[in-house]
Image (cartoon, rainbow, N blue to C red):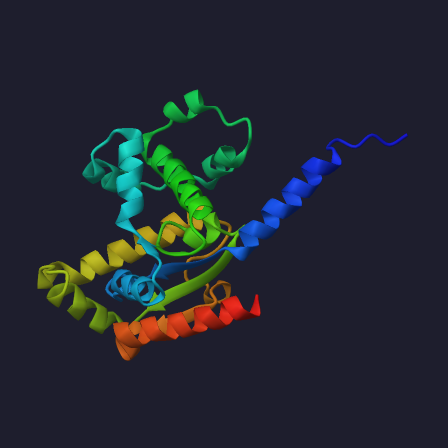
Length: 226
């Protein structure tokens, strides 16, 4: 006689929850420094009338940890391991164990939990950074990568981000490297592997507004086809 581990109602519920998750559609944006990815994300959210999350994730996490956002932002720069994220997903992951982890590790784990909670509460939103397309891979996710010409990105860093000219190139290289290492370490993907994204745009050639329009139109088509 075959014994089923789960009863029929449980199986149906799991299938139903899976279908609901796939009906949700999220736009996740990874970007090189100086490409205006955050601004493009805001424009997309405004055009679609949906929520935008970037630093907001950090602020929610800061409240959960009862730590100042600035301190948490510094902790984000230290790269945790993907093994810890796997532990978080396991049902037997202990809260007491989580509390004993280094702050940088706890930040990524709790941020990921926050992102998933927001995904449960929203049918759609725009998320910038934080391995969004990996953390939300069980949902319908439209991944975007924003890149651009190095010289033009440096100019933007100086003019828009008010970075000192002599430091701009160094800041660009350091930030790009940090984002790449963070993403590659915490996911099973490569940050600059453009094959994993639905759309890759050169914002230094197209500009923020046109990039936003392209993303909106492509996302609408993506939703229609799913």
